[in-house]
Length: 128
Length: 110
Image 1 (spheres, chains in turn purple, brown):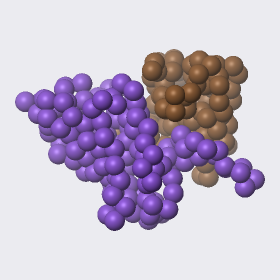
Image 2 (cartoon, chains in turn orange, brown):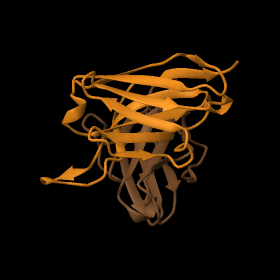
Image 3 (cartoon, one colour):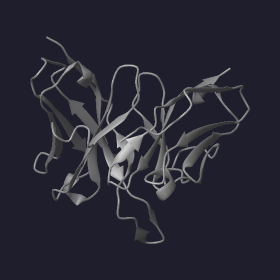
């Protein structure tokens, strides 16, 4: 059974860099699938941040791209997220997730777009 | 990229059916079958309910169904149960190789 567990600092000061990790168990990241980050500000909806394949292919939300770096450590089987120059608007629950693609009758779509496994999330507050 | 448009809230009585709409554009919902839906009860992580417009993951009851017409996707929940009360989010792949979510719909079971 695939499980994801996020970890982070809990509290970050404005203008600093937020660093999060996601430990994956029950599946080897370098076997396949895309892996990504999604966040949810308090009382608001979901926002996709970024997705990555173990080989290095990455996709970013254009609104966050200039501040975000996603990476994978296959030796530790972990996914990471760095978000720099944070403000109060970055206060949210951050989720990591596995992204899958549609397959039917032995043929699979090119794009991994739906999140079929989620972590429980980690809360990050930005405040001085 | 703008969020997909969902009604803020819907409601229904136990046993009834409700439908949640999700409107985008030809660059996302209308252009692909890559639409998914997520259920999020309060204080929990989202759960995948529908992918590829109408496919259900193993374990999701067949009371949940998805469809699409033009730029609008829909999630229908039939035979409403109290446990269905949650927020529901649609999501779509876009022509820019990104993913966008809807603003979310709160389902209340009366």
